[in-house]
Image 1 (cartoon, rainbow, N blue to C red):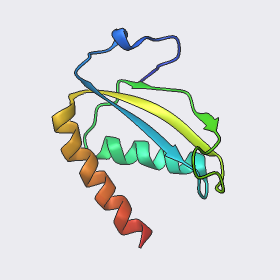
Image 2: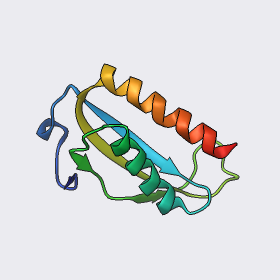
Image 3: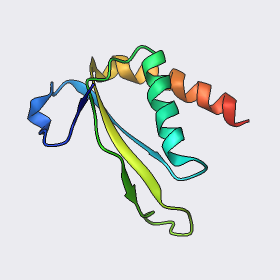
Image 4: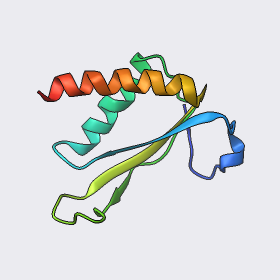
Length: 96
């Protein structure tokens, strides 16, 4: 994986999937790392990963600040949707 810092969108395939990740509960950094691992375990080939940024909530302000990041996967978006749905389902099972 490479760092996305100082890169432009044109540096990557316009057909690639770009995903924003965020967490504002519990161990936020560990949650982001678990999400990255789950995406890799689901078969995504992450070609770029951004730095992690702390941001304030928007609209609903009575909640903790977020840690956010972005990733890039060279696969086409349609194929990505299928795999990310599987990751979400796994996460839903863990939260119950």
